[in-house]
Length: 238
Ligand code: UDP
Image (cartoon, rainbow, N blue to C red; front, side, top):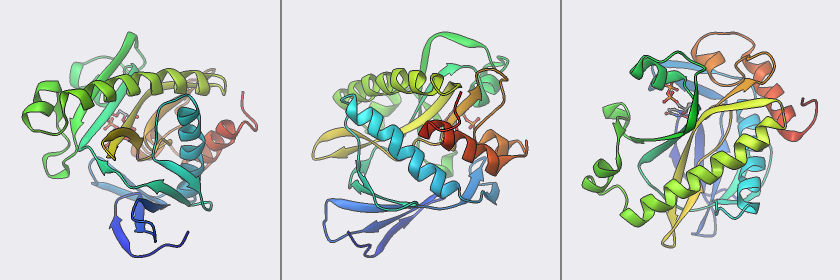
C-alpha cells in the first residue's frame, strides 16, 4: 500500500491518503509536546516505539472483540488503518490518582480508586480541551446516546485488558487516554496507545515509565520509551 497525499499533520503523527478511500497510512513522528503545545521537544525514536507498541495493544484489544482501526503495520513508523471520523472527545480512564485529577481535586498522586474513573474532555485546543460530562456531549452534539454507551463499555473493557497485560510486564496502568471514531456507522477504537497516552509505573520501584519523564524533566526519556517497548514485546520484562 502506497502513501498518497498528506491529509493531516498533528503533533505526533502524519496521516496520508492511500489508493483505497477507506484506508489511511499513519506515520509516527519523534516530536513531543506537552501542556497543550506549550512545551515542545523531540524524543529519539519515540515514533518507532509508539507505532509498534500501539499495534501490539490494538491487536490485543481487537482479538478480545473490541473493534479497532488497525489493519496492519507497514514499517517501524507506519501503519495502515481504517479511515474513521474521530469523535471530538478524549476518553480518559483512571485507576490511580495522577496528573490533572490530582491537581483539580487536591488528591495526592498514587491514591488508588475503588473503581475506575471515566472522564471525558472536549477535543478543542483553542479551549484547552475542557472537561465535559455526558449531558455536555449530548448538548454539543458530539456523540449520540447510543455511541456514548458504546464508548463507555469499550473504554472499561480496554482498561480491563490493558491492566492485566501491563501487570504481567511489571507495569501498573495508572491512567490513559483513548479516542474513538465512526466507521460505517460503528464506533471503533482509533488513534494510539503508547507511553505518550498512558501513565505506567514500575510495579516494584514506582518509577514513572511514560511521558511524564518528558513533561516533568525527569531524565532518561529515550531509555524509558525503549524499556517500555521491550516489556510490551515480552523481552526483558518483569
Ligand atoms: N492524556 C493524553 N493526551 C491529552 C491529555 C491526557 O494522552 O491531551 C493522557 C495522559 O498521558 C494520561 C491521561 O491521559 O495518561 C490522563 O491525563 P491527565 O488528565 O492527568 O492530564 P495531564 O496531567 O497529562 O495534563
